[in-house]
Amino acid sequence: MLYLETLSPLTVANGVFPRRDGVPFLEAEYLREALLTAALSYAIGRDEAFGAEMRRLAQHGFKGDAAGLAEAMSAALLVRQPELAALQPPDVSLAEVTVERVVVCDLESVAAGEEKEVEVYFGSAQTPLLLPPQLSTWLAAATRGFGEQLLAAENRLAARCPSRNGEFYQRLPERLFGRATLPLRLGKWSSESQQGRFLAFEDDEAAGRALLRRFSAAPFPRSLLQQAGSGRSLGWAVLKEREP
Image (cartoon, rainbow, N blue to C red; front, side):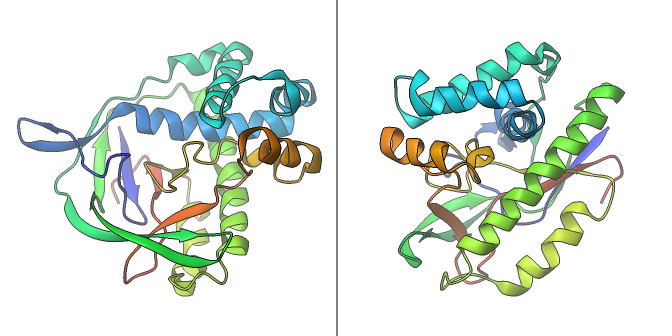
């Protein structure tokens, strides 16, 4: 049995969690997407041939929009590692959700943008997700590597954001990586659709230029959702074996 523990508020795409018999839940696809996004970035960094294939897609091979490119990259990952197709997390029942205001921080103009009310979840919940030992070990490395890169990029880009909470970012690395956990970026944490799936191209100038020119996208999303008042960015969480 695994436990999902949120380290910052968690919300979903339309800002409203679905209900089953009146009980809110996190749809399974969010957990699956978080795991596959980390796995994709890790695979691009570790497998030279796969990384070259993904760069080719970004630079000239894929015809479509940014969301389509992200989906094409995820599909290619499942061809490379079919064992990841077995990742079928269940929905996660949530004890309680609250309505809070979040602010959209524009990381290009470094300014706080619109505020909106959304449902958020903050706490811990059981999930009967089972991972084979070999896959669990690989995903632990993948999620840690992705989480470290994502946090470093966010720290750099959001440094001057008016709503940024410096203390939250100082404490976050230990909470994410200090114990045997699977660190995740979960749910809706940016207003852009790609949600970090291009992060592996962060240090590749040619791929970065192609993303901007062909898809009006960037390796790190250009907006960030933060909890109004606290300045915590949304969606940081961990999966762990012991109850928090």
